[in-house]
Image (cartoon, rainbow, N blue to C red; front, side):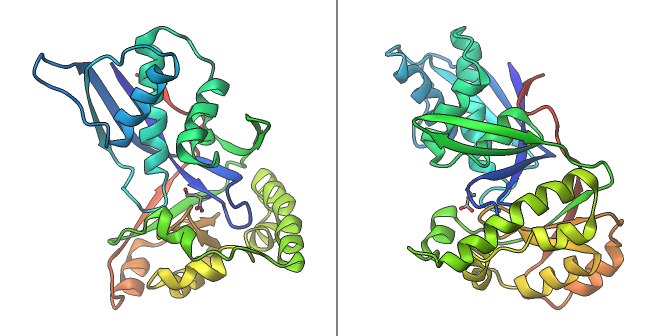
Length: 280
Ligand code: HSE
């Protein structure tokens, strides 16, 4: 059995822990029965999620070998842990024959991940806003105009979500809360209709990026580069920077621009994945 799992970019500026977008950046999870002497380690997030599924039905977990390969880089803010969780749960759902709905899988995935913003678009595809309401995860999906191009500037270093969450303040001011609330509708409309001015205003965030920026060597410069062509924001917990634009970015210009940076930064272009995780 082989499934395709998309990478995701969360937050999109002001939508911390709520907004996420699936990208055409894929990993593939292959599963086969394990030999008699092969046993899997539950430390791995794919197996942990696979095991979680069977545990929650009080059933024994089948012994399988799973291998994840593909383009979603680890700990870079492109939903690699969501891909492992959704991959493990989806495979468990298929093998068990339980036929759980996507909504139920999302609830399980959110329990494992702690927040729904990556796992929701990873399951459904597209641009999704999600929240938890009395144990259920409610989602809404939004249109993305075909003119938008999504570039990811991916550095050669990792940043763990845990470390990126540690720098966030325990309390926020009313002013900053209002600031972010006012941006999100503009962002969603901008993405829907292809309006660059609204997008620029709609991706500014007062709650998270002012604190996380300092963890990413090169952040201000890359943000400035992205803003020249469109909007730039930290992808998920970072360190990848997402650039949303209508223009084709020039790779030579990018390479010249980043040549003196302390780290190498790879620029990749993706489209919106509209299908989510699927069996192939
Ligand atoms: N919303 C999450 C964060 C995404 O920014 O910490 C990463 O898991």
